[in-house]
Length: 485
Image (tube, rainbow, N blue to C red; front, side):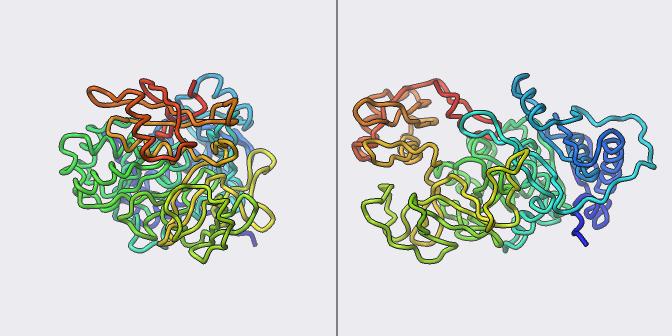
């Protein structure tokens, strides 16, 4: 007999029916009430679509989104959460590519026949298509099953002390159309039958007020949120009641982590993952919670190894590395006590089933999937993220990692943000070019930044520098390098 799909809202309603599930402004919805609304939405969807049909959701972080999302899953259909801020072209592409038969921009209020039967949904059934931003070209739909979504919660739940529990009040400000906001945020709240406080549009002062008003104990955030909070008036008082602060989706600057620790006496837990892994793969919650610059270690139940360009295994879940030719050392970072950088390759029940519609690009026959991200294990056995393979710059045949240069530039007090890309060079083949958004009064000039880099980087890594007013970012704060001029 096939395993049925988990239904976290139904389970939460049985466990804690009167507990607030979601808070949105003055609206408070209990788990029992949310369960009823989800069943109504499920019957509405089932009456208009066939099992396996894709149903798009074009909503912000609202109760309606939660009702629509969980309703689609309960109906045995496939949810396709899309960014409400998409341009018409982006929206048309995602709808056409997914073959969505319905688009929900609100939850229908019309009467629904209670006799509409809901199907038996299986754990291996496709639950959601999440469109990844990618580094070039059109986004691809990552196929995640009910089992994959649930597996990531089970993996996170095995961490001690717990990151989230049933008594927690969780701030849900990361967009639900993103895997991090959808499953690590909304999905975690449902999994634990906790309480979620919804935020449609992030504002530092307004969210600090919400944290105080609702006695929020867990924040699920991105670097820009923590940067804004630590610079806001009264942040220390508002954040003092937090039990857990989680950050993901993009690297967190050590100076922001240090300011947060100084204000609250607590450390921000750093996570690493991808849409394709539902999404969390590693976290400092299973290693050193006070360590800056690391992405921690794999979650319980996630297998992870680092692989060299030639296919050699460098490191596996904290085990010893294989010695490589020193000439292949890629990164001028003190990693002599750890491993050379290698591609992160993972295996686990939380992995996706490939890209829509044919499952291409998914895990291999043994379940391993190469992430395209490069990391090394330091002397403590903690992982340090280096860069994306596709962003590697080859200067006269030598590997240059943009993230290393970006870290140097970000270390200058007059730099608000930096992004480094490869540009053609007639002598060296490629060279690094840095787009820098300056800060301060007066802001630094190009010469000052070049001198700063020259003192910290090998000559072949020195970038040309271009000052820009700001850098293009995604909804989760990640810099969109493909949109740079």
